[in-house]
Length: 317
Image (cartoon, rainbow, N blue to C red; front, top):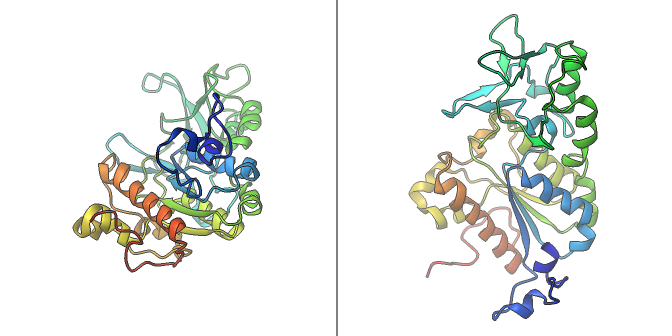
């Protein structure tokens, strides 16, 4: 699909995109937008197949996980009432690009009337235990927690090979299937294959699923795209595009970040996100549209100023 949109590959009937449209498509202004888990796929496509889509111009990722621990919401999650629940065994001060620090030494398995399917639980002798969310990736009919947590269930004696639930991926399965579905080791490939790619990372103050205050998924993506791959990278749309799409009054809840700049302390990362109600049209439609419009305008007019004074192209007459 990407190659077809770029005009470099025909469809199954032998037609190129410009053969099918009455208008002239801007095939030199094509990018990828990905929300949540599809961001892993989008990023890995850039890494593994960048040479085949070398004319792609930008990537906009909204609240994408980066590693297996985040897929499984092991640093923390939100309740159904949108109350943040932070794993007390997650240590953000030990952040690294390729991993985050979670202490799995107390991980056990709880299975009772309240949790009939069974879940990992972090026992806490000095406070309340931390039980993981029911939201966990499922592949091939099995629940997939991180490689480290799954191994800890076995190493800690929480489960044995004999008592292992049929719907829970084993240590062997997680070790085999997670690496291809993470992105933190692939940023160098993106920098090599697509050195002119531009990136915008879109996120709210309160993520749709990740509750950790330091937003390690955004941190790792910024480190990977900007510091490792050496790409132009922006955290959220420029304020002038927010104002253009949601109005100045609604835009008061947005910070005026510059491109290629990150928080001095990622524990304050929420301040760099936008104040959008979960599931609102502002969060799900208007901010992503502002992000895409900014990136397309920047590409079209080759404007890469870190901070804009006005929208590059005024869509509203």
